[in-house]
Image (tube, rainbow, N blue to C red; front, side, top):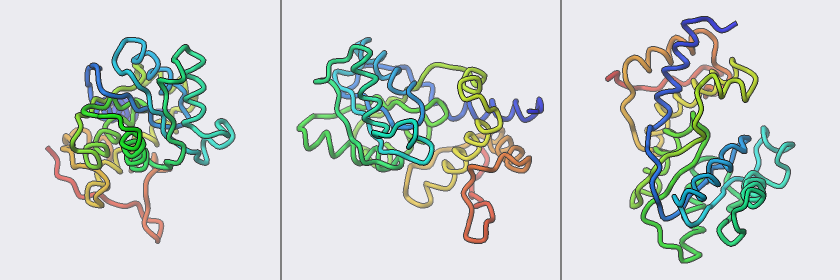
Length: 229
């Protein structure tokens, strides 16, 4: 049973993870691979609304997608987009990436090799991965403008789609930890985290929502160093 406090804290993290960008026309839309076909659906919707003339889907497989998407996340996204009416000529596939950094780097290289000029990217991810994806892209592809997008849904909607509230909160907590840790490792730009979000993160991690937290070689949770706003 999720307590009222835990749910309130999860909502704070959910809201922070979303960038709040308004989609606008960009050079290309890039859909980041995951277990969630909603990323492909959102990419198709944005394409049909004229927000990008070209879709790039990026992603290999992971332990959570290997059975569901045996041909690779990007390939399944491509198939979904074509099924929904996007012409095959408007879809490119990057099938090797296994993390967000590779998603960005490999997509950037694919477009460069194809001679596609890119000044702006509509970056499509799972709702709670918007900020992490944005921060990674800003670090690895600083010369382009990044506009974040995801399937429009509430935290409750997302929990209902996954069917496991505790797992979703674990993912929110793990994503926040990475936002705090990865800038020090050069994986993404640093972003200010408001005090109420850090407090919510601390309470949830201390309450046992820790299955997605990174740990050191001794199994201890890695502690980020971040100042409260």
